Length: 197
Image 1 (spheres, rainbow, N blue to C red):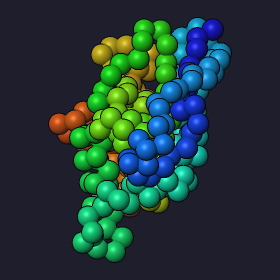
Image 2: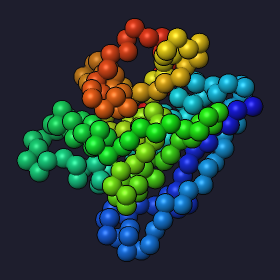
Image 3: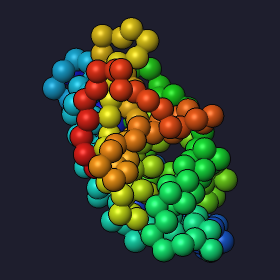
Image 4: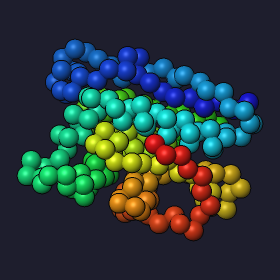
């Protein structure tokens, strides 16, 4: 049985001021919470569904919403969805660095842990599922519909990469925040499994 672990801060609480975090001596202590999967190989459908559920949960967090709104320019027009998405994408490009998980273990960090890393260290690190969960939760806080998608890349027989999609009108736009040079990717040629978040 494979192990799928979600990493949460010891106390999943965020104080929105960097000074307040440092002043109270909060550390980035984490604990891993294992989730048993039913197959010997991590079940992509289970992982995608779990990520989608977590993105919905964290997408209602008022502290995360306050942080996301702080990313928007002060001269933004009413309901300027393009500016909102652009600000969140630029934040992810600038502040989240891709780092792989250990071999044979799947870790997922909570968006609040990622945000603590940014506020205390200036950057956060994580693999594709961390990018997806953090991005989808942030986008959800300001009313966008999102999806967690998984595809098979590099000739793999297994689903081995996850990425986000954001609904723009009636169309879904694929966004891979691990591709820092151009997150707007077209994965329409790939077989995919997805879950709405």
